[in-house]
Length: 129
Image (cartoon, rainbow, N blue to C red; front, side, top):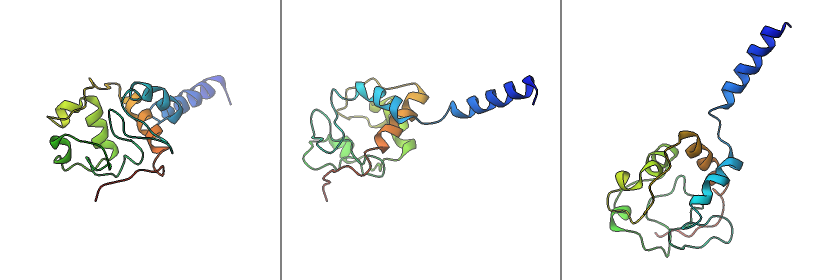
């Protein structure tokens, strides 16, 4: 294979990875979330609710967390697209939310954060009925 073909092959492979989700990078992105949220087997509600099992969960449903009425009545069930929109500007997505966070604007950081949160899909979380 000639050099030009090899370079093209490596460039194409690299471009394919540009949009991939990386949970290890997402863990670093989560550092800004740690001030208010916990994840993992021993996670507890603190300033914000536990984020275990976030994707697929109804907004305002973690037992023992005092959500805003806006959040409880939002009708949102978190999926990747909805969370992506929310985390860019929480107050725009759910006016009246208590979440005092300016947001994450970088699309790749959001993808990586979602990949990290997915690592806690099966971690314990108590939901209200």
